[in-house]
Amino acid sequence: MNEFTEKHHAWLAGRFYQELTKNHPDKAEAVFVMCTQRYAEQRGSRMALRALRDGRRLDFTTYREYGEWVNTETSRQEGCANSGETRAWSPDHVEKVYMCPWAAQFKEMGLEKCGTLYCRHIDKSIVRGFNPELVFEVPQSMHESGYCLQISRNAGFREGQSFTKHTEYLKGFDYHCAHCYKTFREIVTAVLGTAGEKTALDILEEFSETYGREMGEIILSLQHEDFNLI
Image (cartoon, rainbow, N blue to C red):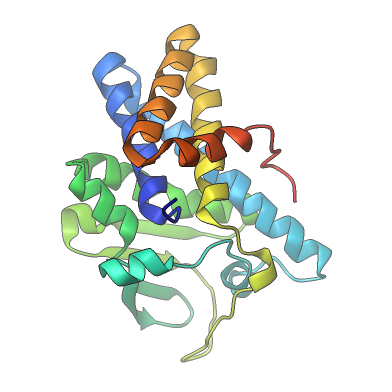
């Protein structure tokens, strides 16, 4: 079995976007955005729960240290791991991102518009789930501008400050793909009823056909997980 990666994660989001825009164009964008936001808020909430348990403040430093993923070895070998540069440290932290595996996958699928929507909302919503008082902005993404611009307002980082993630809190992309699929499936089913449920089931079947039955079964086996909790 191949390694679950960021690109599998992006593939799932991209396929939901494609099916929504094809079959429900009047509400596709709003439903896709809600799926992305809800998924991301749940991730941010898990990060906050761990930080609070550890007695940490819910600020941008803690946010950076409690993230749940790092780039996979596969993405590094393919040359699409995250890369960028910091343009400012304080009071706002401003970062340019020139490459990421999600953008690479959306581009491969011809889904630049989906990528723009996803990137506009994903990190902002993770931050909101972590601490709604923090302000995170993504005024542009690499899909339409060549690079992604991410701004953490009033982060107040020190020049050259580094952040080390807690390895014990990292999750593999089997977990993240299962979470993405579950949240998108629940929301499209709630909004679209049996048509939404069928869409989700068809996407999982296509995932299994594309990447292997074992990987599809792993996603299915994690559907009873409560992704709101730690």
